[in-house]
Image (tube, rainbow, N blue to C red; front, side):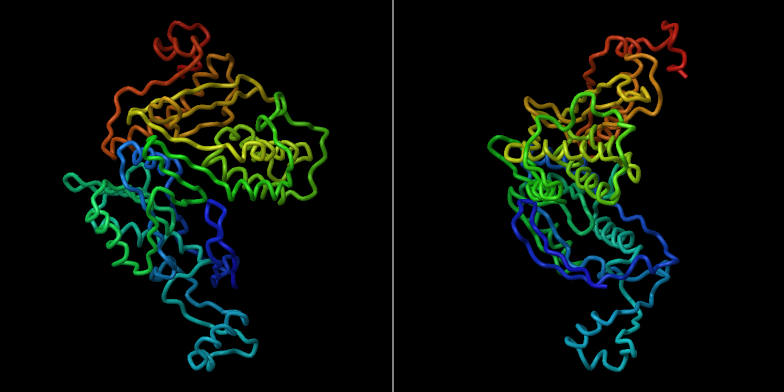
Amino acid sequence: MINYLEKYKPDATFDKSKVRVLARGDKQMHTGESDGPVARIETLLMLLAIAVYNDYVIFKGDIGSAFIRTPISEDVKHKWVKLDKRVVELLLELEYDKYKDYVLQDGSVIVEMDKLSYGYVEAAHYWYETLAETFTSNDYNTSGKDKCLFIKKDESNVAICGTTVDDCLFVCNRNDEWIAKQVKMLKDKFQEVTVESGDELGLVGMQICMDREEKKVIITQPKHVERIIETFQVTKGAPSPVMVKRMADDEDSPLLKDQSDYMSKCAMLMFILQRTYPEIRPAVIKLSTKYNKATEDDMKKATRAAEYIYGTKDTHKMVLKPTSMKLTSAADASYAEPPDVKSHSGGVVGFESDTSCYFGFASAKQPVVAKSAGEAELIAHTKVGDLIEWAREMLDELGYPQDKVPVLVDSTCAMQMLKQGTGSFKRAKHIKV
């Protein structure tokens, strides 16, 4: 089938029209490997903070027609593809003599693929393998904490690249010859590579602005904000993403007739909270658990989050301004708020800053019922601790080893349990277990 779309840059300006011929995934009955990894958002934000702190150059390499550069593997069972009438008409217009003898009575053509195409279930997996092999064969090391992060060091030079399918974000020290070498590596392998450089870049839906004078990164998503406002049709702002005591379920509220519309709107909110609006996480994560059973009240709550986005659209910015490469973090818990009395964990991990430089965020309902506020806080610290451990090991790979990482908490009980263990607490044996 044919897929047509208009592409916009993250700053909401028009980029280009794109048309792709896609193999239909619903027709692929026997499929192979389908894992197609991309760099974590936390990884990309960490790289941007490192770049602005060290005054490194950033640039993006966009590899054109990525999937159809990937040779088809024996693991791919669907080597024969039926091109529908519309696609064949276009092919005949372009190369009539090549295809005319193969047109069937219904106007279709059967072809045998020797490269992967868009729509193949396995395409992203084998594209990643092709891209990863390109980096490793050019002396890059693959990160053990994010398989889409590649690191290369050569005496005084450093090149770090985070990949998101066919977009490669490079962070390099200021050496024109070194930078040109990294670009040449991609062009030698893939030929069709567009390089976007400078202190303003678009990346995975984010508009990135490097303020070198202030040593900070400003990240916004104006196009996606505009899309949310249009989709939710909001015309007023809200001071917060959710009203106090509004996270409880209204059991009398009728079910929505169009559940797919609700899921689509929640997905839009999930996309923006992963990048530039972390403060809407608690509300949207709660709402995302209501898929296929959402009520009219749930839609009102989702709309409230959209109203908050509308109200902050002209001033909202995600800022990364590190004052050092030392990690810091904070953790907190909301104790027994929902009707099922399971508490909610929240926290952040980032670099030391006199303003803001958080790249990792945790927000989730706790899996167990905490018997006290102190226990809920301890569970929250554990949740954030997982993110701290990941960040420590990632930075160690990048050449920024960490000592002790401070965790800011506001529970004396939790701090005592963390420092002293649970032996002296009569009712804390279950925590120890």
